Image (cartoon, rainbow, N blue to C red; front, side, top):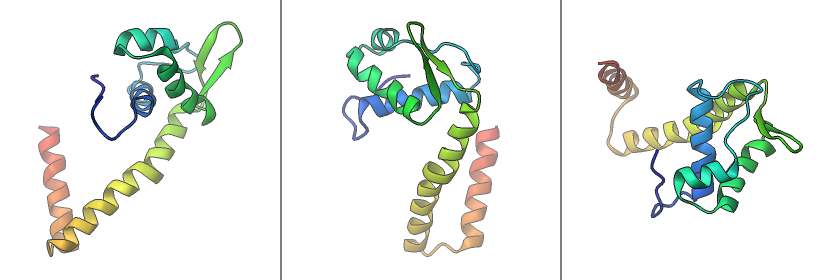
Length: 125
Protein backbone atom coordinates (compact mmCIF):
# COMPACT_ATOMS: atom_id res chain seq x y z
CA UNK A 1 0.00 0.00 0.00
CA UNK A 2 1.08 3.52 -0.72
CA UNK A 3 -0.03 6.22 1.68
CA UNK A 4 -1.66 9.33 0.25
CA UNK A 5 0.46 12.08 1.79
CA UNK A 6 -1.36 14.86 -0.06
CA UNK A 7 -4.98 13.78 0.42
CA UNK A 8 -7.59 14.76 2.96
CA UNK A 9 -7.31 11.56 5.01
CA UNK A 10 -4.84 11.76 7.88
CA UNK A 11 -1.88 9.38 7.68
CA UNK A 12 -2.63 7.66 10.98
CA UNK A 13 -6.19 6.98 9.78
CA UNK A 14 -4.73 5.41 6.63
CA UNK A 15 -2.49 3.23 8.81
CA UNK A 16 -5.48 2.07 10.89
CA UNK A 17 -7.45 1.29 7.72
CA UNK A 18 -4.49 -0.59 6.23
CA UNK A 19 -4.26 -2.71 9.37
CA UNK A 20 -8.00 -3.35 9.20
CA UNK A 21 -7.61 -4.49 5.59
CA UNK A 22 -4.80 -6.81 6.62
CA UNK A 23 -7.07 -8.29 9.30
CA UNK A 24 -10.05 -8.64 6.94
CA UNK A 25 -7.75 -10.26 4.37
CA UNK A 26 -6.75 -12.89 6.91
CA UNK A 27 -3.12 -11.76 7.02
CA UNK A 28 -3.22 -11.25 10.78
CA UNK A 29 -4.82 -13.99 12.88
CA UNK A 30 -6.56 -13.92 16.25
CA UNK A 31 -4.13 -13.42 19.17
CA UNK A 32 -1.27 -12.87 16.70
CA UNK A 33 1.17 -10.03 17.30
CA UNK A 34 0.75 -7.15 14.87
CA UNK A 35 3.37 -4.85 13.42
CA UNK A 36 5.04 -2.52 15.90
CA UNK A 37 4.91 1.23 15.46
CA UNK A 38 8.57 1.09 14.41
CA UNK A 39 7.95 -1.60 11.80
CA UNK A 40 5.05 0.41 10.37
CA UNK A 41 7.14 3.58 10.43
CA UNK A 42 9.86 1.83 8.45
CA UNK A 43 7.41 0.18 6.03
CA UNK A 44 5.66 3.46 5.21
CA UNK A 45 8.52 5.89 5.84
CA UNK A 46 6.58 7.80 8.50
CA UNK A 47 7.17 8.97 12.05
CA UNK A 48 6.75 6.17 14.64
CA UNK A 49 4.39 8.42 16.64
CA UNK A 50 2.09 8.63 13.61
CA UNK A 51 2.12 4.84 13.27
CA UNK A 52 1.38 4.54 16.99
CA UNK A 53 -1.69 6.76 16.60
CA UNK A 54 -3.03 4.41 13.92
CA UNK A 55 -2.44 1.40 16.16
CA UNK A 56 -4.06 3.17 19.12
CA UNK A 57 -7.25 3.82 17.16
CA UNK A 58 -7.69 0.07 16.78
CA UNK A 59 -6.76 -0.55 20.41
CA UNK A 60 -9.35 2.00 21.54
CA UNK A 61 -11.97 0.13 19.49
CA UNK A 62 -11.05 -3.20 21.09
CA UNK A 63 -9.68 -4.59 17.83
CA UNK A 64 -6.19 -4.84 19.30
CA UNK A 65 -5.03 -5.48 22.84
CA UNK A 66 -1.71 -4.86 24.52
CA UNK A 67 0.48 -7.41 26.25
CA UNK A 68 2.78 -5.40 28.45
CA UNK A 69 6.34 -5.62 27.21
CA UNK A 70 5.37 -7.79 24.22
CA UNK A 71 3.40 -5.50 21.93
CA UNK A 72 -0.07 -5.34 20.41
CA UNK A 73 -2.11 -8.40 19.49
CA UNK A 74 -5.26 -9.06 17.50
CA UNK A 75 -8.40 -9.45 19.63
CA UNK A 76 -10.57 -12.55 19.33
CA UNK A 77 -13.52 -10.77 17.73
CA UNK A 78 -11.57 -8.17 15.74
CA UNK A 79 -12.83 -9.20 12.31
CA UNK A 80 -16.47 -8.99 13.42
CA UNK A 81 -15.89 -5.55 14.96
CA UNK A 82 -14.30 -4.24 11.76
CA UNK A 83 -17.05 -5.71 9.58
CA UNK A 84 -19.73 -4.21 11.83
CA UNK A 85 -18.08 -0.79 11.80
CA UNK A 86 -17.60 -0.79 8.04
CA UNK A 87 -21.13 -2.01 7.32
CA UNK A 88 -22.82 0.43 9.66
CA UNK A 89 -20.66 3.45 9.07
CA UNK A 90 -18.33 3.34 6.07
CA UNK A 91 -20.59 1.48 3.65
CA UNK A 92 -23.69 3.37 4.77
CA UNK A 93 -22.00 6.73 4.10
CA UNK A 94 -20.82 5.59 0.67
CA UNK A 95 -24.29 4.36 -0.27
CA UNK A 96 -25.85 7.62 0.90
CA UNK A 97 -23.50 9.56 -1.40
CA UNK A 98 -24.33 7.28 -4.33
CA UNK A 99 -28.08 7.64 -3.73
CA UNK A 100 -27.82 11.43 -3.55
CA UNK A 101 -25.87 11.52 -6.81
CA UNK A 102 -28.35 9.15 -8.47
CA UNK A 103 -31.21 11.43 -7.40
CA UNK A 104 -29.40 14.44 -8.88
CA UNK A 105 -29.06 12.56 -12.14
CA UNK A 106 -32.66 11.40 -12.15
CA UNK A 107 -31.72 7.74 -11.82
CA UNK A 108 -34.47 5.68 -10.23
CA UNK A 109 -33.99 2.78 -7.82
CA UNK A 110 -34.30 0.10 -10.51
CA UNK A 111 -31.68 1.72 -12.74
CA UNK A 112 -29.35 2.27 -9.79
CA UNK A 113 -29.64 -1.39 -8.80
CA UNK A 114 -28.85 -2.33 -12.40
CA UNK A 115 -25.74 -0.16 -12.33
CA UNK A 116 -24.66 -1.80 -9.08
CA UNK A 117 -25.23 -5.31 -10.43
CA UNK A 118 -23.23 -4.49 -13.56
CA UNK A 119 -20.39 -3.11 -11.46
CA UNK A 120 -20.39 -6.30 -9.39
CA UNK A 121 -20.20 -8.43 -12.53
CA UNK A 122 -17.30 -6.39 -13.86
CA UNK A 123 -15.41 -6.79 -10.59
CA UNK A 124 -15.91 -10.57 -10.75
CA UNK A 125 -14.34 -10.76 -14.21
